[in-house]
Image (tube, rainbow, N blue to C red; front, side, top):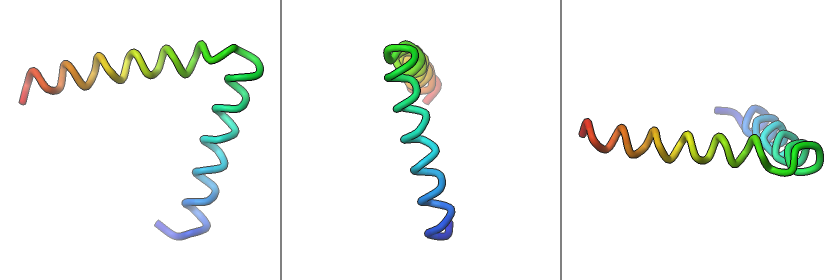
Length: 47
């Protein structure tokens, strides 16, 4: 991964988080965090 790509990806993630905080009140980020936690738990079961 080049530096330019890493910076662009970091800015895109920061933009998404800022937009979610301002417009949606963190609801999308919270939803994704809960789904990710469920996925990790499911993955640990199959380990």
